[in-house]
Image (cartoon, rainbow, N blue to C red; front, side, top):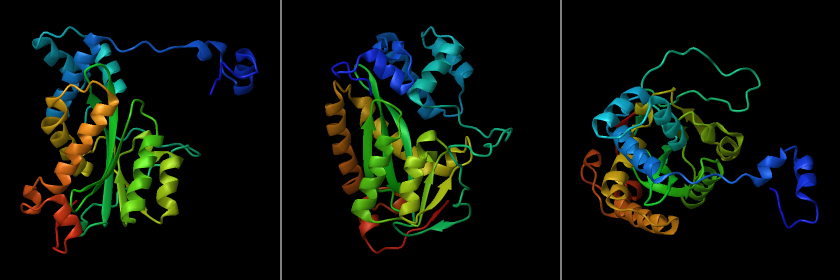
Length: 277
């Protein structure tokens, strides 16, 4: 946004963009090695016990020799894009004119028995040897097939939109697309792609991880079978290895819920499938 090489002075560029001058010179400090170790362990604990909040995670980490306060654990959880998953009281609703609209959940009591009936998506945290990144995947609900995926070092919307556009380009459109209420998926950039393709939009209730359970199971598989076994030295290496894993996941890895079929066989085959939402 700010170009130091531009003929306009940086001060003038900041004025035109209504930005504080300090913004142009700010350089974020890298995450410390201690925090990276802590974030990886928080990720492992969250995957195992997603209902633990910052206080209980702090207590568990303390028993393992990690020294971190509740506020610091909470800060790292927000940085990772995770939160405790449990049913919470509905104490507020989006106000009129809110930028991000929340859509109703459309999968309750729906029998999902064919490919491209329902797609789902989510974002997860991926630890690396030095640093971390985020992974988004588009999954066909009935067959569990990963249709597209992207990684990013920031929790922006663009990499989610790119994955969605790739999935639609390659595989057509589903009848329903289900997400959580994350700001990436409620953003106009994301929902407009779905609307333009005449796809019905479904969103989970807050804290209702079970509504998107198949994507949660995907994260468990990709982390225990790939991510936690390696310390990626770069984003390029992470992308290469995750791509190899998703190829294995789709083509070779059989699923008990699919009666031993691979996602590819279930997606491209003609056999009926049943999955209650």
